[in-house]
Amino acid sequence: MRTRPREVARRTLADVAQHLDAPQAAGEDPVVTGISLSTRNLQPGDLYAALPGSRVHGADFADAAKAAGAVAALTDADGAARTAGLPTVVVDRPRSRLAELSAWFHDHPTRAFTTFGITGTQGKTTTTYLAESAVGSARSAVVGTIGTRVKGVPAASALTTPEAPDLQALFAVMREEQVEVCAMEVSSHALVQGRVEGFAFDVAAFLNLGRDHLDFHRDLDDYFAAKASLFTPEHAERAVVNIDDEHGRRLVDLTPLPVTTFSTDGRVADWRAANVRPHRLGTDLEVLGPDGLELDLHVPLPGVFNVANALAVIASLATVGHDPADLAAGIATSPGVPGRMERVEAGQEWTAVVDYAHKPDAVEAVLTALRPVTPGRLVVVIGAGGDRDLGKRPLMGEVAARYADLVVVTDDNPRTEDPAAIRRAVLAGAEGGAAEVVEVAGRRDAIAHAVAVARRGDTVVVAGKGHEQGQEIGDVVHPFDDREVLRRLVEELA
Ligand SMILES: CC(=O)N[C@H]1[C@@H](OP(=O)(O)OP(=O)(O)OC[C@H]2O[C@@H](n3ccc(=O)[nH]c3=O)[C@H](O)[C@@H]2O)O[C@H](CO)[C@@H](O)[C@@H]1O[C@H](C)C(=O)N[C@@H](C)C(=O)N[C@H](CCC(=O)O)C(=O)O
Ligand SMILES: Nc1ncnc2c1ncn2[C@@H]1O[C@H](COP(=O)(O)OP(=O)(O)OP(=O)(O)O)[C@@H](O)[C@H]1O
Ligand SMILES: N[C@H](CCC[C@H](N)C(=O)O)C(=O)O
Image 1 (cartoon, rainbow, N blue to C red):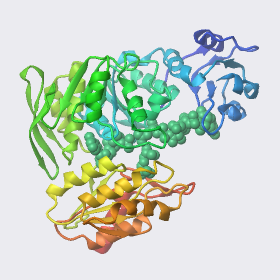
Image 2 (cartoon, rainbow, N blue to C red; image 1 turned 135 degrees about the vertical axis):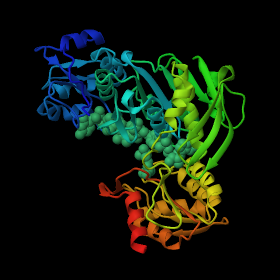
Image 3 (cartoon, rainbow, N blue to C red; image 1 turned 90 degrees about the horizontal axis):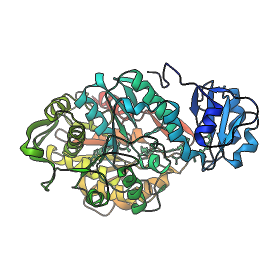
Image 4 (cartoon, rainbow, N blue to C red; image 1 turned 45 degrees about the vertical axis):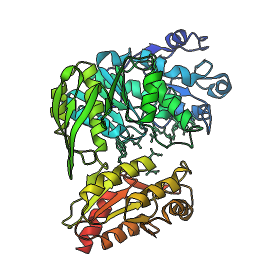
């Protein structure tokens, strides 16, 4: 799928300057047909937003932008001297203006369809996929970690929540495609960096808050504040909140938006789960909604935690007019989510699962979901990513050892760090408990170890990389897909 609308917007640079209430650029007045803040995806005719970043100033790439076809630049006073090769509009804090500018530039595409924003430490991707099944892929779009899909057709995207110029262009594509609902993941990074300004979600859902990203946020309160900012009138019209989560309950008190609540563990909420019956491949339950509504729901994804993700979809889309029974029927058809509780079947007599759990709460959720359906030993292969939150490593090790019988500590994406040092940090949390703990350097060898020891009735979970297609070691991404590696190792052993 294209990432820019077929019918391009055309605005003169003078219009842009006037919209921003900024002085007009001297000299030419080019026609701008797109906006980009990165030379990596800039297209001819674009306005290049040269932003100050944490590593470099975008103005340093003005020549590259011009060579790629940029016709003008938008920057701050600091960048202006370096964008001299392009007619330049100068404003203070250009990043903070970019989202609204991009929405205006594309003539507010989100007015044409329902926008459903999802935030939380865990479950965002899964919830967007369930929303897509609930509404039907022929009517919906999804934006998130695994990528963007418009009416089921993939479009390229790099970040979980794209930068505003890219996002608004994608929204313009969705408008052209007559999408009815766009479900998107809203990361805390996006909220802090203003990627989702310039429009308000019709409905925003809060799933949960756990430890993550404490390399980017000062502390958990700062991380919560970032997530909570989605639930303000500038960002959303209605809130849907999981009150099983302590931070969800805090949010209900804080948000000025109309709130709908949901609970899967028996609290008094607008939407509740009752008679929850987990089995190996999913969960059956009854959904109790407002005004005495009762529905049967089958969530075809393993793990009771997915009941919360499904309830988030039903509660959210019901508040914007969808029929809950239709939503439930759609959820029951979900084909699953790549790399989330994904089973690998290669003729083995034990259960193999690949899951994206790379945070302590997710590791706990996955292992506690698999324990009741594992008559034998529960084995987890786990590591932690380099150049990310250091504090979560021992916590992940500890949780793995608390809930599994055998923990194979290995490498995730080491990035620029020493893999052995990362393993040591995970091991420090894992050792000393009842679980058997082994260290195996190299992810393939670690998976091979788990495959070699697995017996009938066991479950092996390969955690942390889910759908990822590569392993980042140093600056190089080596092809690596947990699902493929697991399958091949099982086949080789057989
Ligand atoms: C912390 C963070 O989110 N940083 C993002 C931010 O970087 P920054 O503002 O510091 O920019 P910079 O790298 O100093 O560069 C300055 C400017 O020069 C431009 N530039 C730079 C180099 C070049 O060759 N050409 C070019 O145009 C950049 O596009 C940027 O506008 O803006 C950049 C441009 O969009 C992003 O690439 C960068 O994402 C980094 C790579 C990243 O890893 N972000 C992750 C952490 C992130 O955002 N993750 C969340 C999901 C998290 C989760 O829940 O798992 C997400 O929404 O994806
Ligand atoms: N509601 C939930 N509560 C706890 N854990 C969950 C929940 N939903 C999913 N998980 C676990 O978290 C992992 C990541 O799920 P998912 O990709 O849906 O979340 P995410 O919020 O998009 O994460 P990320 O931002 O890291 O991509 C899953 O593989 C599963 O282990
Ligand atoms: N969006 C997350 C994904 C992490 C996945 C895990 N495999 C890791 O490398 O830590 C990040 O880049 O921090």
